[in-house]
Image (cartoon, rainbow, N blue to C red; front, top):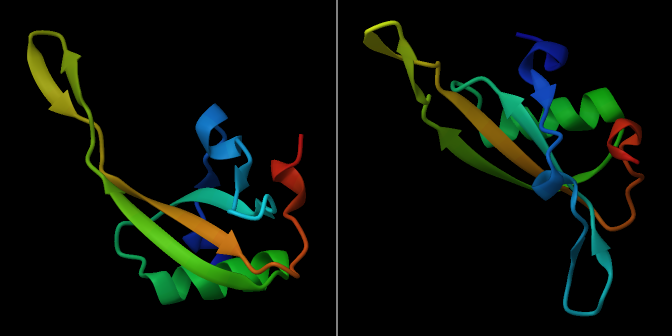
Amino acid sequence: MNSYDLLREPVLTERSMAPVFDREGNEIKKYTFKVPVSANKVEIKQAVEEVFGVKVQAVNTIRMEGKMKRMGRSMGRRPAYKKAIVTLASGSKTIEFFEM
C-alpha cells in the first residue's frame, strides 16, 4: 500500500476545519484524514510527510465504529473506519486544500 492509498480522504467538517490555538495564542495546524483501520501512526506520519511535503509533529488516531442503518425491515451496519488527526510542526507549511 503506497502513501496515496493510505490517506483515503480528508474530513472536511466545521469542527475539523475550526482553528485551534495554544496557550500563547498561536494557531496549531491540525488536519483530519480518513485512513484504513489497519494503518498505524508511523505509517500515517510517513504518508503525510511524503504526499504533502510537510513536517509532522504528532498523529492521533480514533477508530470509528460503523453506524447502524435500516435496510428495509432489517438493520445493517456501515463499515468501520479510522480517523487520523495530524498535527504539523510549528515551522511547517500549511496544506493547501484545507485552506478556505
